[in-house]
Length: 206
Image 1 (cartoon, rainbow, N blue to C red):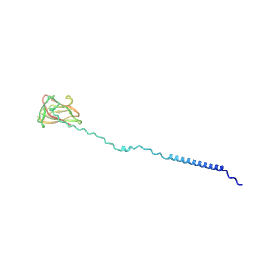
Image 2: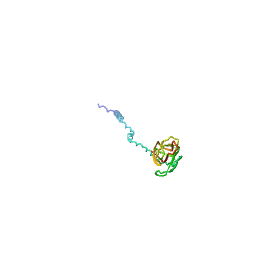
Image 3: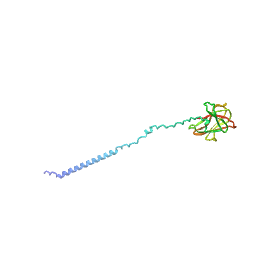
Image 4: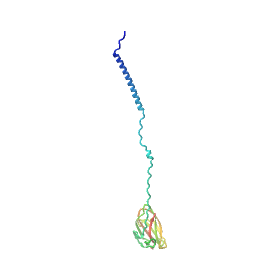
């Protein structure tokens, strides 16, 4: 006796179970693949952060050389003419026999004075005074003072004979180094009242 064929619902149940198992298997495989992908992504190195520009290049550029200021220019001093002084005490002018002509001052005695206003010495110090002198007397002195006839002398010329009242010679006096603008006084000192000096011109030098 032949067994009757299985019912259709039995086949459908078996097929349904097969499909379910297949879907579970596929789902499990998908989960494995997703986990593998996440693991690979976490293991991949992070992108390098951008570094700030290097300062080596800028520090390697040489800095500009420091500027140096020019040294001051020495003042060229004009000759001072005593006959044209801004102040005069006890001194007279006369025609000179010195080279170049013009006038000199003479009859200089104790207590006499000459004053020159606003003498510009400049930024480079004057250190000497040239004086064009003549005389036939020995002794006495000319004192150079700044900004007052009673100030301390910055230099002194001791008078000696030149061989005659119109026999001219240039004497040089050392002075305290002087800059800026000043009033220059020449004061004359002698132990007696005799005249002892003629002057044609004066000129400060460096």
